[in-house]
Structures are given as C-alpha cells and as structure tokens.
Length: 95
Image (cartoon, rainbow, N blue to C red):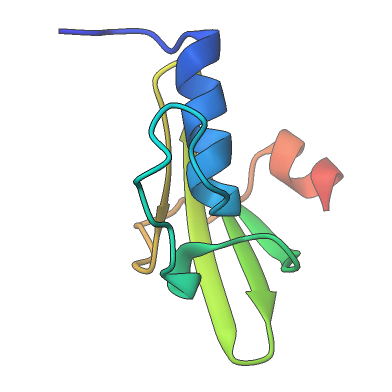
C-alpha cells in the first residue's frame, strides 16, 4: 500500500481537477463538470487538522470542495468535512 504522494500522483490529481484528457489513458472521459475547478474562485480555506486543508471553490451555481492532506492525498468532493472552529494562522493569512 502506498503511503506518500509522488510527482506522478500530483500530476494525476491535477488532471482530475482540471478534467482534461488523461495523457496516461486517452479513453478516459472526464465529462462530469461537477468536480471541475477550472474557472472557479477560492471562496474559503478550512483547516480540518494540522496537515489537512479543505479549499472551497465557487462560482454562481457551482461549488466544489478540494481536500489536500500534506503528502498523502488530494481529491475533490461535494461534501463539506468537519472543520476546526478556530482557523489556523496559515488559513487566516492565505485568504
């Protein structure tokens, strides 16, 4: 089982979030516009814990959450995760 992200994992995640054709498999069709973040603005950043952040991307009619855990995972979701009640210093300064 894999425990850390590699450059290839980051590349695959970037393709998933931008929904372009995959250079690894041209037969994959990324036609679902629901989880695409290209053209969206960052509305807010939430810290889930010390190494996990949730970015809320939004434009009128569309909302996508992207969860990033340092060195472990990046994925989009339509569900909001439970977040800390007080934002970290990092989250406060980024926005």
